[in-house]
Length: 129
Image (cartoon, rainbow, N blue to C red; front, top):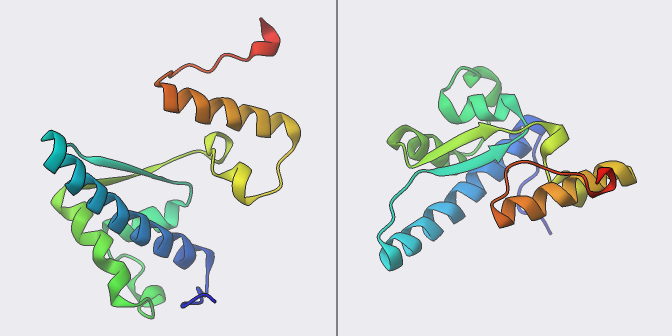
């Protein structure tokens, strides 16, 4: 059973960013304790309006019903610990897990996700080789 119902897509994306922010800050703290690395976290989102909500309160009238606990992400972004970046829907590997996608797009996203884990920046289509 879900604890909260989002009234818009922007609100749902913003809640997801807030939850991912909490998890990444905790993992960053653990990693910093083990390795001493204190770099900025990049969090990717495909919703431009949710990204704008993390930076400032320009949509305050329409978003005043969002619970205060989700605004934690604004403080983390303001401190410079987290950067929320825009990712194109075409290059978002999470789409293959959340939406029905054609086989060609699934293959493209699968290659993107494998290459990102391996640290490869340029995607090469094996069908063209």
